[in-house]
Length: 103
Length: 466
Image 1: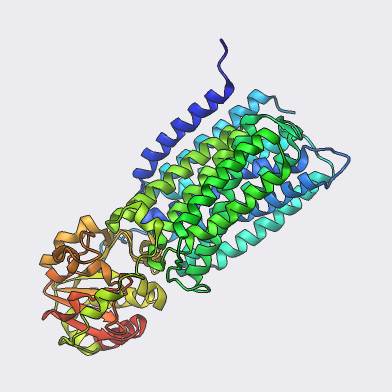
Image 2 (image 1 turned 90 degrees about the vertical axis):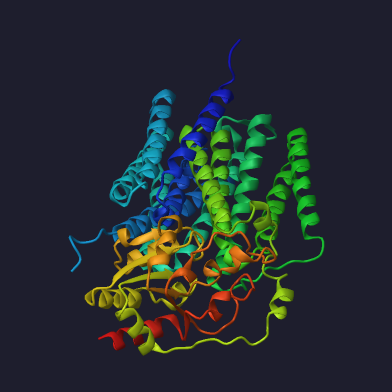
């Protein structure tokens, strides 16, 4: 009997939840805000769905209802990807250790 | 252009890079590198997807154009946003992820051939269920985050909005969603799909309006989690490993943060979500309205006390963010250090409007992160400290949480500020905090109330110190 590919995806999903669980518990509380902004940025990987929706359809017709939603998805996700990673970068750059010994 | 297997391997690689991005956040030193991994992972995912589609006609240039427009908007926001506005920024970004998920699902529903999901009117049942779940959660994330954004921004009042039968209405709409998905699978009718999305939009609004302003840390974390589950739902539909892995990571991350926030308030998740807290406490407020003596002081008194102390602990809260007092605070601390005073910062898990909010603000003001401590790390030090300087925090310092089982905040972990030799409490008036209860600390013998705006008072203290 063959295993449905869905089961493989489900396995990846469940295992990733566990990976996420352990990785996130090890995040230091002082970085919880950057954690939220970076998770927000990576969840915008949904852009791959939007790209397929926008480009993979009928190549003779640039815009149809389905591809239009794809382009809109690309636009929204792009705001998030750039905004999310850059604002995380900006925040992380501010975290500094004490310089030598404070006078 | 790229074989399906190679494509899957690349998606797996970007999934692993995303895990490393989160792993990096375990310490500030490794965090910047982690962020870089995240960016590379995203670049790989986008790059291979474009190659796999292999359409380099007009559409490709449109794609670049949309990426450029969206990216510029994002970059502009990222550089311009003040750190105090971080909670609303994150809420706003969540809404975009939610809406993008809805758009991708709509597109897949309208044109299933593109995604190999069958044909229109004859979509695989499994894909249809995944698609429905992804778009429903995405839609809830979208409107929920908009409401959270409006509340955080102050455009909408932060007080809970409740009405009769609210929970029943939500329950009814939730059941309606399940029914709709069921009939959608049976009939494949487009109108059912649209209704599903509209109802989810409404649920998103209804879920967040009864939740009060200070519970926002939980709400933001929860919406963070939802945006992850929505991405995972779409990932299942598109059979895309990168999306499934990321969705699971983000989903569990948000769930853990919600849990930490709830624990910081000693409330159950459902208690927060069902909302309406803070509105029902009027009765207890009136009961304790009798006048009790309070000691008030001015900046000179505060400066004198702190100058002659050997150790000072600063307790910042949401009020510091509102008054934008973090830079003045840092300046005051520098002046104190010049006088040989040992200064550290104590941060309660739910201080501010999102997890880690205070830490970011202090980092912005150039406070080294090894002077900033979490509740468990520093709580024992209050007993040996001369002065506690409470700036913009209230409920998280209320000793009632330990002594009065009748109090709504009873059992909430609090900072033991009252144990220090003297307490300086910067506050504009004696009004109660978010929980609507009087803070016992105001009336203690060792408390000196500094009635002023947090920033103004801190600046006056600096003048007096120099």
